[in-house]
Image 1: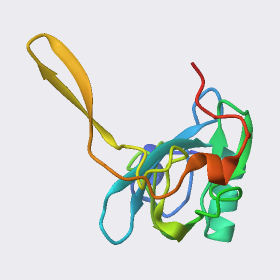
Image 2: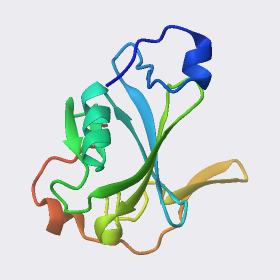
Image 3: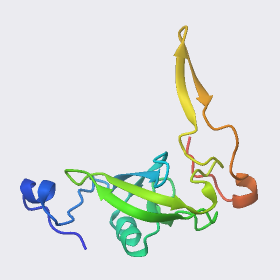
Length: 151
């Protein structure tokens, strides 16, 4: 499915898909809502996750904390149906435009993983919530499954 990277001209302006995975075998992926344009999440894909995403038209990512490919929404039901997949000029970053089943992309329960804004004043930096309500309760959906956030 992926072509060898043979020339800058082909990578930047050709029609061959030649993604550049980093030394860990990963490529960053940003995901937005196809209707609103809202940034939903940032994750990574390995070769397998990118291939599965292309073939199934549903988002698959590589979990660095679990060290495995995961199908977004397989547990929660909040799958991401891919409307389009874009790749940047030097083919080292993926952009997914998706429709989200159930309206949530964040394992914490919010629509977007970017639900807080960094605010700074008077030498103090805080996080201010930009989303007030969760779409779902993570305990109801995930039960006692391990949290993927690693300290």
